[in-house]
Length: 152
Image 1 (tube, one colour):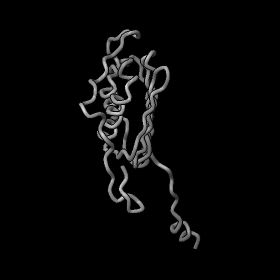
Image 2 (cartoon, helix red, strand yellow; image 1 turned 135 degrees about the vertical axis):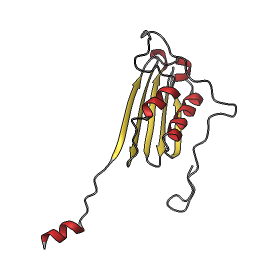
Image 3 (cartoon, helix red, strand yellow; image 1 turned 90 degrees about the horizontal axis):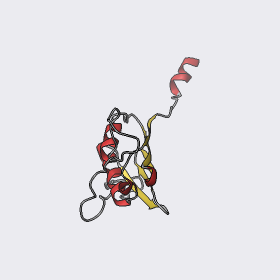
Image 4 (cartoon, one colour; image 1 turned 60 degrees about the vertical axis):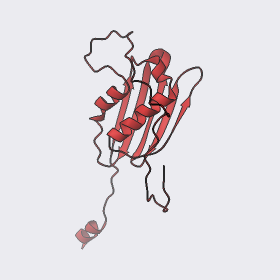
């Protein structure tokens, strides 16, 4: 019976949430600090309930920082332009995590004005304070990763 064949074959459809945010009017010193940006990135990941496996940030010349984080659920990345006060952020998760509520978290952690805030386009929004002594937080450790090894 043809109906039985349909029951045996399951169609796997990709699923996930993709959040792309372009932000302006961010403090230039914040946008040029690997340490402060990595703190903000790890905080976004933790507040979203995601698992950061590893990340790398790289300072660009003459200014700017690019960061990429590998998540158990997919990835997070961003690029900054300090002189323009701009950051672009990309967060993708496979699965059912809803990322839209994370916009407010990203605004708070990256020092971004909320929509509707009275701000001239030339104003710079103060960034979050520098990280605590000892540098940025380390990614959470994932025990029992495939292959029996621990992953950072």
